[in-house]
Image 1: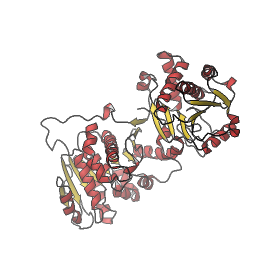
Image 2: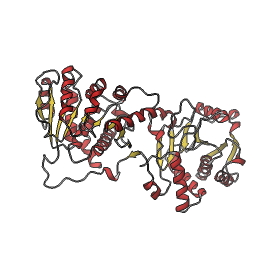
Image 3: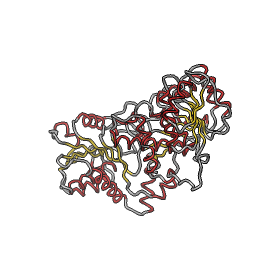
Image 4: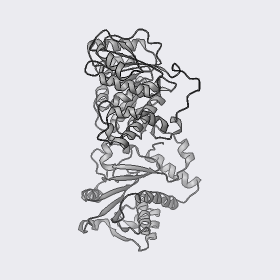
Length: 497
């Protein structure tokens, strides 16, 4: 799913109107019906619905929604902010269509109104084309609405929120649920905007599929069912060597669990042969917990000090989970980077070593996958003032060093050397638990050692990791979810693809 800029959204509307062809007012009706279809899925039947409409096309959407909800027997009232006489053509048409069936008041009268106990506020003041902060009477109105205790929904985008630039303190409507049209806005996928957006749902309003196919963009939202992420069947005569040879360098005293979680996930991701190079103290636990894996024992009992002999036989080398940052481990990591030329998976302590020794980044093989959480990423690139700056730092890191960077979190973002970013749709807050990242490392390494490209391996790994986490949460709940559960549900996650 392509994530478009406000300018591209306007072009998509115009292209659809011209080439379907369809009148602008009818496209607005289509969008409003799509919003109402989602509205009906929420338990608002015994509540009063107040719609706050601007005088542009977003307000026109709000007026059409009000008429449709009234037709469904909801108790509806419209509040218009601004001069109705100066409204857009489609706004005026929809205002006339209300024909007295719905009470319409000036938004400036809201301050003296009695607020019902059971109220749903629907925001239709401003659309996605907003390019400057809301001020004056509109800012006062939004601030007042934010202070009302009620259920709150936004049509397309919360008013005052910018699509693709930082808020910098500008006021915006605080929505519980945002129903957006055709595709998510970039703003919805960044943590700093959650207080405004709440939970969101994208609804198809039939914008031109030809335009959506041909329009160029750099941001994508990946979902279960995407054609380019479906898994091929394995050949009848495939053997374990065909399924990839993986080396995982992981584990040290006190952090053996990270190596075990990553090893299990790697095997569950379909790796044919897995060798785990680990410190001496971890050998017996790994043999016991992951009998499918071979183990290469380091000369040191507590941490990693060397690398196995010939690394050229491995299709993928992954390093980081639980290795620590001992000086001898740093030197071992340096030797790995000197030896390996194929794309690697680098996580956890290996990322911390890179952040302390930034010159090593130049030695990381092209198209390798870095999988930091926000703290590790901050240590790699420095701090940021807002999430847009953070995203730009991620893209810059990928481009400069020809790396795939997986920044973990809600809507994990995957940036590529060519500057594309894929946001992920799967996963849940229960996955914010120790060891979850080690599982992702194992999945990514297992996929990369097979026949998948580095970018596809990263995208698949994040998608599958999230699907498995969602299945775990459905079975065991978010609070009770642990990283081992994610491994347990991986086979079911693979079946979904």
